[in-house]
Length: 353
Image (cartoon, rainbow, N blue to C red):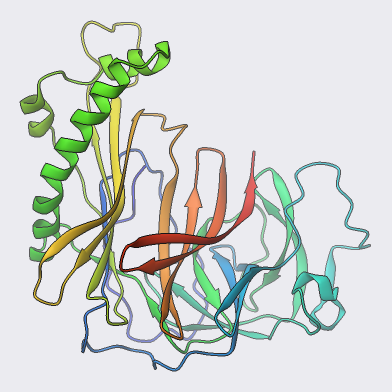
């Protein structure tokens, strides 16, 4: 899959812009995502943590789909579950005013605020106004969303382009970096031996696997490590600033190989994807915080891409707000960054086919 090219972040965005941050197809991907936690670095938000904040997926068709709330540092799932069959939510009609929503939707009495703030790779704390809930598509399923005032009427399922919150305090957005810039090249150089070692181990394991599919896939990768090392790759970066952990870097590095001559019946090349997190100390020292390696092919049907959009600081804890997208489904997740790694706090189904 392919991340969009770097774009210059506007200093201030006041109006909803259709198509902002819309993704293209992700055919090949090598992504590095830098999450800055540089101590003393200049930030654009306050460090005061809100007591209660709601979080929603922000789609490029102008719809917010709430999925989580943080109450005094404690996260919980909210909003109705995605309906992918004949489920009936016992609500007549396709629209509801904010004052008419069931209390169970927020897991607490009250109603969603009418003002939210959108964070994407191209927008920082964009004010978003809502006044009702409406049934909307969620891939092949259905859910309830909050249409943003001034956005076009949704005609089909929109792509998630960012995250919206009911507070902009203690929130930092991710900013895209130039993969050909000095920082991008440095991170790429650090990850190349990590990729080479992890790929070698994974291929050896797959070739000894009792599963025929695993052995067949591994046999489509070049056996010579020097050939793998010479194969080009692409990189993508986004960066956020917050906290005192130094810098945390989410990375996803992808390298694609051509179909080997010995496999003439196949038209889909092999692909290796290395993803995870790095920690970068204030002095610039980089170390691996978490890594995952996937051996797949050009369809990537068994691979899940991750899109981090914002960081939230709740007390002394730092959380990543992200979208996770598979071949035919997606979900929204909250992950906590700790000195020893990352811990999934919650994940909510966003629909699929």
